[in-house]
Each structure stands twice: as C-alpha cells, then as structure tokens.
Amino acid sequence: MFKVLAIDDEAPIRQWLEFCINKIDKFQVVGVASNGKEALELFKSKRPDIVVTDIEMPGMTGLEVLKQMQLIDSEFYAIVLTSHEDFSYARQALHLGTAEYILKTEISDISLTEVLQEASRHISESSKNSPTIYEHGKRNHFLQSIALGKHSMPVDELELKNYNIPLVEGNVIALDILNLDSALNSQEILKNLKGLKNVTSFSFGFDHTIVLANPTFETKEEMKRTFIRTCEETVDHQACYMGISEIGNSLCVVHKVIQTARQRCSLSFYAAQKHVFYEEVGLKEEIKHGEAYKASFSKELLGQEYTKAIETKNKMIHDVIKEQPTDIEQMKKMMGFFSTSLLHFTKDDIPEIENQVATVNRQIQDASCMDELLTTMNSVFLSFEKKTKMRQDYSSGIMDAISYMEKHYSEKITLAMVANVISFSPEYFSRLFMKETGMNFVVYLNNIRMKNAVKLLETTNLKVYEIAEKSGYSSLSYFSTAFKKKFGQNPYEYQMNARK
Image (tube, rainbow, N blue to C red):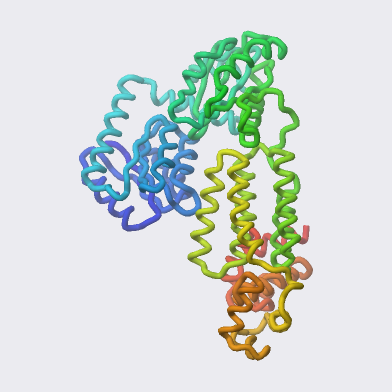
C-alpha cells in the first residue's frame, strides 16, 4: 500500500483528490492539508511515499513545502498540480530528482491514476535497485541535521561509518553547489573536480547540493593553484554557483565548514557574474538594524511622512547591498515587508490588496539575483511615489478635512460627515481626497487611528483593548489584524518591544 498526502488550499479539490486516490488499488490517502504548515506536520507524522500538492497556496507555495519536506526526509515522490501560467515554474520541482506535474485544467481521475501508477513503479524500482534506501534516507537526514546545526555532538569517524559516509579524520572541506539549470547535474560537475577524496554529497533543498570531502591539498595556496581554478573552469558561464569553505583541520568542524560554504554560495545572489566564492570573510547572516528600519518605515507612513519613508526604504536597500546578508530568505522577507506594508497602508480594497501582496511576494521569492528583487521593489514604490503628494501640497479644503479627522478619529465619523463639515458634496470630496492624498478616505482615517494607537502603545501602560477603543476601533480583532499587516507583529508584541 502506497501512502499519499494531498495538499490544496481549496476544499473541493482536497475532497476530490481524497475520493479519487482512495478508489485506486494499492493507494491510500493518509492525510489532507489546506496549507504548508498542516502539510509539514502531517508529513512528519505519516511519512507518506507520495505527496500531491498544488503550487499556488497562500503563505507557503507548494514548492516551498516540498523543499521543507526534503530537509526532513528526501525519500518521497512529488506530484505537483499546476496551471498553464506557472508551468515553467513547476519545472523547478524536477530538482527533487523524482517529480511529476499535472495541469489542473486537464486533471481527471484517469490522469491522476496514471501519474500515481508511474510513481509506484518508480518507488518500487528504486527499492529493487537500492536495498538500503531506508539507510540512505537516514544518512541524508543525518547530514542535513549537521548542516542545519541540529546535531548536538561533535562528528567522529565511527559515527560517519555507521551511516556509510567515507570521510575520515583529518583535513575536511565543504562545497555548496547551487544549480539553477535543471539540465545540469551536480554529480557530473563533481566528476570534473580534482583534489578531493572520500567524497560524499547530499541534497539541500531544490537546487543546492552540499559536498563533503577530505582534500588532497594541504594549504590555501595549493588549493588556489589547482582546485579553485578547476572549479572556475567547470562552472564558468553556466547557471551554477559554488561556495567553498576553508580547509578544516578535523571532523569536529564539519558543521562550520558547511556553514561557510553555504554563506559564501549565497553571495551569488549579489554577484551573479561571479561563479565561485572561496575567500570572502566577515559574512553576516542578517542586515544590521533590520527591525529598526521596519518600525521606522511603518511609523513614517502612519505620519504621512512619505519622503522620510522612502528615504528609510532606500537606506535599508543601500545597507543590504553593502552588507550582503547571507540569509537570503530572511532578507527577502524583509524586502517583502516593505512592499506589502506599503500596500496595506495605502489601499482599502482587501481582495485587491491580497492579490497584489501575493503577486509581489511571489516575485520577490522567485528573484534569483538582487537586480530582479530591486525591479519588483521599484515597481511597487514608483507607483506610490507618482500618486502621492506631500502634505504641504494639499488644498485648503483637504487640509481642513484632515484637521477634522485628526480631532475626531476616535468617534464614528464618515466621509459624508467630513464632507459636510467643509461644505463639499460627498462625491466631490471623495474624488478630490483620493486625487490629492493618493488614498481613499477610509484608508487615511484608519492610518490616523493607527498612528494614535502606536503612540499609546509606546507611551502608556493601557491594555491593548483599551488602546483599540481610544483609537476608534470598535473591534479588537480587526485592530490586531490591521496592526500586524502594517507592522509585522501584533499590538501586544509591539508594546512589549517598545517597553524594552
């Protein structure tokens, strides 16, 4: 019996998958999940043979889910559900080594049966050709735990032998090979490299291969004369990058050399024209003052200090380029925060915002280099800068309206009420307000309320629900949700951090 895990954010599709798969002989659905978090928990507990997942899901894409699953246990078969629009994107799944994808527009119980039977043949063939497939999975899990720093004890030769890993005590070196081209094979690249013995390798996510070996060279100078030159000749002009560690003097530093190789390889994100990284030192995982930049940016948007907000964003980008943090995923999340926070501050149409946020985050996540990431960022901010005037440019009528809103924000005020105060018709006031401020009345009013809430969170000991009420929010739930979208943390967390 082959165990199957089905993942899709749409309930009807989950139900259909479960119904169809359970009808097929020798296949059983052991779990269904609506998002990445649920899927990972089920994967850990059920250890399915086959994972069927949609690509497009909120929070964590299907490919991100598969990437995390592979770090837990690489011995499973992936089937990806995709559409015509993201068909090329789905090809990234091939980096798993075993994967199939089905067009959602053409999926049927027949096509589903065919790919599942193909998966079963592949699994059976792998088991027949590799009687130690379970041991191989344990070996990969062991090596991945070392790479992630989760192996608490120093590595020794005896432990390595238990996992059939040929490394011996003595000098050790690590490579991180980033392969962005599914036509390239990391193992073929390794065959061209001289100067390594007792070589072992394991996958680390979709496109990374970590290599451990005992080097035959003993000094950095000898390494540069022979090994580095061969590496550069092998990967030059290809969609392939390599981070190479220092020469470690014992097995006790295996985690350290892997970490160095990974950090150096990540620098390819900032220097795509370079292919081999081996001398870079003083590397930092995260940008300095990242959280401070995020807080300042949000507060400046709240205060309609748009010029300062743009300056903060530009300073953050400048520091990222200068410091080149090696945790690319974390850096992308920070970039995503600036873009999505801007959208939440300036728009009121929730479905439109969520669609834009999903698109922007997808583009940021897909960026393979810094230039692509900055292109996405600029597309979001240029539109904002063109539409938004500085406050001193507002007409007297709009200034009077804003003044009234700032005095009465804690009350239940409406657009019609404010329009009446300044003797404008609601329709004309709405159009003029949008034209001059770059956002509609409701968004602007909520930003005034949020600005007051932030001030109270920072300067008083009031409870969060009291602050919500004093700021004009009738619902604590709505206030907390809106706050988190703008600041990346809930009001209580913000208040605790402010007190510190």
